[in-house]
Image (cartoon, rainbow over all chains, first blue to last red; front, side, top):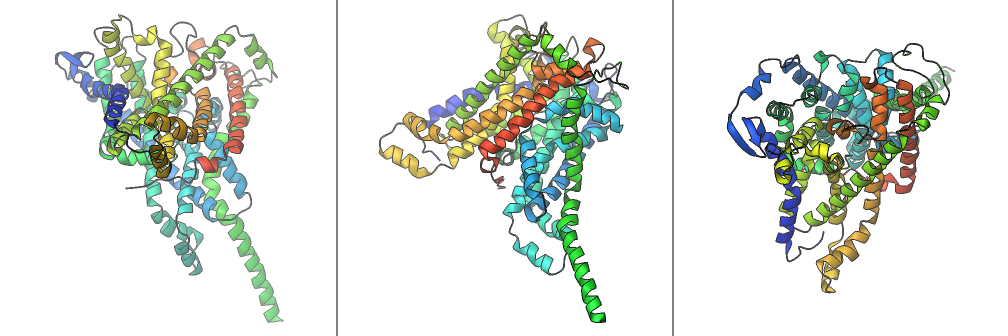
Length: 274
Length: 316
């Protein structure tokens, strides 16, 4: 850790200038939806609830908001749950059990962690068609979980490596099964890790765009990302309403950020890929 | 006799148990992960290669024919190929430069001020990454609108959207602001773990802050910088999400179309009426092969274990 240079306040100023675009962007998002017209960050003309009519009516042939909202909640919730459970099972096996092929598996997980999974999208589209899972929420959920598993397994393996092995050993000697040890002893001890991976998975699934955009067609199965994109791709964009929709969509993220930015910073420092 | 038989039987059961413990239990723990990874990683790698050898398209989806390397030959005859290659190089190169440069700047500056300020700045830089990409792009579009509406438009006095006027600048900046936090966090951990004695020693020797950064910190950051560069090169090469949302490869003809976006559009968008799935797969196959080779190479060079290391998630 470097020492504090004498003129560090000047550096704070430089940092503030560099970070200004981000703050400006957040302000624009918080502000624009509430007014008729906004010039830059200055509201011109009166306030407007017209921008928010998507809350109670369906706009321009789109499904009503509750459908994509519900789909996104299901999508993010199921993805995070599955990812945490499946990754900790596999991570636990790699951290605690000796089995043939363990080293090879660890190597595979690491290679896949660096491998850019988006390049497989075309083949995944084809495979979902064959499996009959194309245009279903379940299909996209499975794909999203699978693509994030290498990261999750690696993270959870690290967590279990970190836990002391004595309590588990004692339980095994007392005749508890591996399965019982995993559920009743190891998982509760790894709670911080589960929470970290769960938070990451929730955020990542909530924002996911390219997978549902590619693998879902019916508007009944749209997620929030697709609902928003349908506004973005219009020829004449109604920025007021879009900012309102965007604010609704981004609200959980902004709230989480406001409440737990230190926690998020720790999670993302812990080796989560970007 | 009976005792011997029982002993033998128990030995068999014991062996069976050992076998089960060694094979079945780990297999049960690993089964769900293995199924998903095989289904959506390993099979797609093979499928991409196989599909690229067929003429599969909307018309021939049910009964594709083998065409050998025809798709690849077609690809190399494509008059737009040089343009797409140039775009890809430009996108990866410039974004990488911004990502690593900005990540390094933020890490160096934010570790040289009071920790409270440093953390605040780093947290804010996480926002572009955790924002849903669609909302992030909306904010960019809103801020870069033409003169009376968008802030950038007001500042530059332009009557056109900045995205159509300077598509490349927008793409690099938008991608870069998402990517910079990756390097920022890795460099910050590296800087924080440097021993304070180094800095005391430098101070005692009368080194200025800049000299300390130049002669002490930067040399120690050599490996993290190389790692971030290598890692992001590979992900940028295949990423197209923000380009798709910001410019959709335009404005005009292929202005900002990169390799991965072109592959995606050939295979999966109805833009050309008949979707040329096989051709798109051939373009994707090139990326998949590069991806496999390079990520195996990274594992060897970086000994990932040391760099990603033990995940250190500290919970306050």
